[in-house]
Length: 144
Length: 144
DNA sequence: CGTGTTGTAATTGAATCTGTTACAACACTA
DNA sequence: TAGTGTTGTAACAGATTCAATTACAACACG
Image (tube, rainbow over all chains, first blue to last red; front, side, top):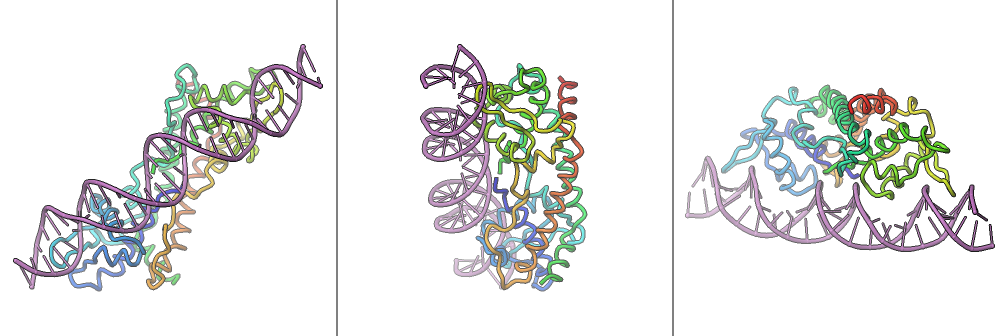
C-alpha cells in the first residue's frame, strides 16, 4: 500500500514554522507560505494543521494578519506527538472480514495480533519520541 | 489510509498451517482450506502465499494432492520475516510531490526524514522479530 | 465596510485493496 | 493416455483512500 504522506507534510510544516515564525511580525505564518515550501495546495496544509491544532501543537490566529504559530517550543514537540496527531489509524490492520468462528485460529488469533501490533506500534512511537522538531530543524539546516 | 490486512492474513495462514499440516497426509494443506479459516477467497490466500514462497517461508507442491507447507519450523519464523515478505513498501511515505528546492527545509528535510523513518521502522521490526509463528500459535490456542 | 486569512464542505482523478472469475500449468492416478 | 484436483496468475469490479482543487462562510482587524 502507498502510505499517506500526512506525517511528512506535518513535520515539514512544523519545521518550517520553527524556522520562520520568529522572523515574522506577530510570529505567525500563513498556510499559503507553508504550502509554497511543501509544494502543495494551501488547503492540504490547513487540513493537516487542523489535526495539529486539536493536539495543541499549533495555534491559529484569525482575522486580519491571521496565520498559525507553534503552540509549544519546538524542543518540546516530539515526532511521536506529531504522529499521534495526524495518524489516528492503527498501523497494521486486522482481518477485513471476520475469520471463521468454527476454527480455534479464527477465534483466538485476533486478540493475540491486537496485542502484538500494539507492541510493535509502541516500539515505533518510542523511537519517534526521541526526536523533536528542534532536532529535525537543526539536522535539516546542517545537511543543506 | 486503511492499512492493508496482508500481514494479518499471512500470519493467520502460517499459524493455521503450523497447527494443521502435521495432521495431514503429505503434510500439505490447500489454499481452499486456509481460505475457509480466514473467511476469504482462495485466490487472496494464494496471492499472499506467493510472497511467503519467495521468502522461503512456505513451499508449494503441485499436481495431484497438491498444497502448501511451511518451509521452515514455525519456531524459526518470526513476524519480522513475515512482515518483510508481504509488506515491501516503507511504513511512512515521504513527500508526494517534490518540495520547494528554493527552501532550505524543502531541500534538507527529506534525507533527514528518510533516516528517522528508517529507524522507526527498524524499531517496529525489532519488536516483531521477538515473536515467532510457534509463539503465536501457542498463545492463540491458550486464549481459545 | 473592505481585506486577507482561516476552516470546512464537496468534487475530481489516481491509486490501492479485497474479492471474484477464468484459465493454463502441473503431476499424480486410474 | 485421459481424468482429476490444485496451484499460479491475469484480468476485472467495487469500495476506499489520498492529494489536489474549487468554493465559500466565518472572522477580526484597519
